[in-house]
Image 1 (cartoon, rainbow, N blue to C red):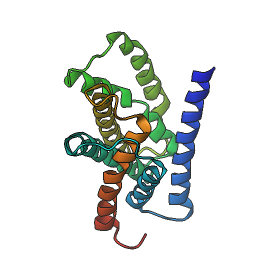
Image 2 (cartoon, rainbow, N blue to C red; image 1 turned 90 degrees about the horizontal axis):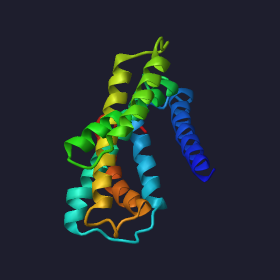
Image 3 (cartoon, rainbow, N blue to C red; image 1 turned 90 degrees about the vertical axis):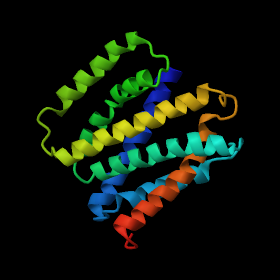
Length: 199
């Protein structure tokens, strides 16, 4: 039951966050997804506690690439909410496993091919669930798929960092904190460049 409860808590938190972001966009006509992403990342950094400090090599060659992938993934997903329903973005988000498997195999990391059966079931469920989507927008789909690709990049790089030479140095919360810092700077710069000072 502990695993089921953990998964349900994760799904509830994820859905609640997306629904809240979409509500802010629609209810208040707040069309600044990159600024919202910046605030999310700043919150993640503020919640963290630096137990381990990365070396310059770890920071610039592992953490910064993870941060860039995370930033682009979150920004694409938040922008997709402007074109598509929350349900549609969640369904397309469930196909992230396809991108992750492809990237893990390309990077030469271990992958159990028996997992292709449940992945196929997820993909078929997503295809059936999106058939006849009333609010379908091609740009929304492209942004969702881009979000998946960058989320997969982030996951694969995190796995590489946390199972490689630095595996004893970073726990998931510490890594989240360090990734959030450069991500917030990138998103703030992107927000200022494309959304201006209005938010």
